[in-house]
Amino acid sequence: MLGDLCDQAKTTITGERQDAYGKPEESFELIAEYWGSYLRSVGFDNQYGFLTGIDVAHMMMLFKIARMSGQKPCKDNYVDCIGYADIAGNMVEEQ
Picture 1 (cartoon, rainbow, N blue to C red):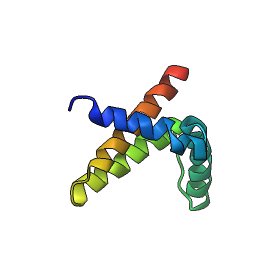
Picture 2 (cartoon, helix red, strand yellow):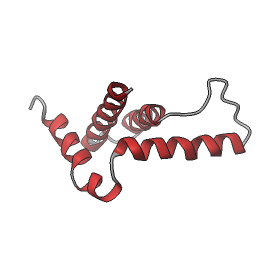
Picture 3 (tube, one colour):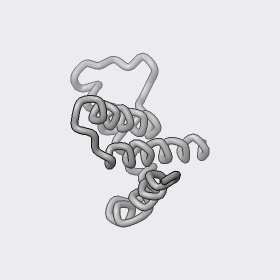
Picture 4 (cartoon, rainbow, N blue to C red):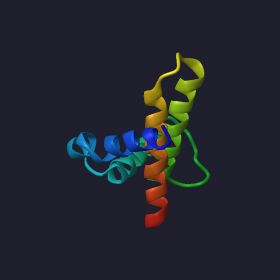
């Protein structure tokens, strides 16, 4: 049904997961700091500066796309991808 995956993604983002982990935007900013520190520690030179929470959302979408491409199809990957896109869109709006 139209919107079914979007509804599932919204429920996932704003439901128990948010209660357990907090706002995803805040979590993604922290993940960006950790990933950036790790990348610098292994010699990766990012000429564009530090990673952002939006970068994390984009990379998580790519992670899900890779799963969609290389594994047995799973509806959850699509739901998660929509969720990450929504988080990125919200972060762009806040900027």
